[in-house]
Length: 251
Length: 375
Image (cartoon, one colour):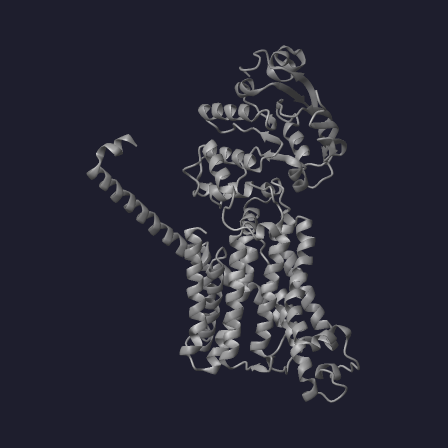
């Protein structure tokens, strides 16, 4: 196996004294779909934040494709090929679905090149494909503010796909989704595996069971266990900390 | 280009054409001067609409860039009067009164009118860029950015008032030469000056329009909605904001230059709080998310202000009426007049497409009912 695409090395994050993440070490290989689970406050979202630059490390390092990225600004990290979906769906509510996706296409992020770019140009086909992929093809002109909660989640996922990053960080994608929508999301993520590397933070264990290859369990800011679903379910420390006696799928 | 953009452009063009045609029907030097002044203020509103309505940066110090442009023009025009006016060593009169013996270095480039005009665009733009660099690199947003712009304006104003020997202090720079281009003099009370202002207004309106319709303009609006989201797509948010803020500053600078030409003086009150807050009101009334709306808002409010304050009936109550108008607009038209017009137009559009769809359905039902069932 080649060297992992993303390495978090002994990361430590503290918010004015409160240590949210301490001594976290995690590595994810290219094209892998990694699920990150753990009880509330375990530091899962913080782990995603420190990869994409939203939160700064107190010590440790984050390396992406063998380059340290933890000192780069957020937009530089994004340009290196890391995309982020937020827990609370974050889209441009005043703009239409089409405009949202148009902004997601950020291969050329400079001011000048975008100043001279009018209309849709070569983005049209790709935007229509993405809209169809997430079932928003009939809402291209709808302002994002008018979408349902599930649709908004979908739109943000489509935005990340428009950005087309190497590594996608996803925070609770199924929150507020119906069972059907959750199932569709699972299918979509399974389809992305291999082309993109995905790190998914999720509470819905049914969903995790559907998509996970490898699961990393966090507890109190540290990595508690890592392995396949079977291994995690059998792990006594994980059961004590998080899953209870029912195992994955019932929690 | 989408159909909506084309319609908008047509409306912009019609309004600008109407403005340009006013002197054809109006032969009153005093009124033309007054309307030219309103148009300059309309330009200032366009500048604020760009930064506030599109980029979400509420600039409470828009008059800073306006005033800087105004002073640049005044300095160039003042130096042109020296051979005519001043006694000793060709210095501007107020410098002589302040016992200045030599023209300060920063005045010297203004002997050239082209340098003066270039400075009137570049200095405000650079000032905005510098202020923007500090604010947006430091992630100062919302109310804090607004207060910062206000504070910066007060500083610049105090500096100008304080440096009386070089700026004319409280009195400003008065007694200016006429602005002329290649020997053609622009009389402040002639139609030529009106045309000059109207053309500059049209140009800045369309430049701003083009920016908002580019992808960069879209990104700027996205920044207004969700700054963080834009950042994590790889766009340098601060750079986009600095860019818009500077363009807005440049447009205000041009407006300031024209204001000096129309008013025939420059004064520290041009960089004052009252004018800055007035622009916010015009833009709010007209609709901050529409460049044209903001511009018309300025024309309507300043026009009403002029008419009311000059009429005998409202001599005492006109400020009250203006205040009431502002309160009503904020309460009932949160997106200003332009926003209200857009909502109504949108409603008509929807009704029309609905009617069209229904009539089409009726046709298909009549001719080929099976097709309907199949689809």
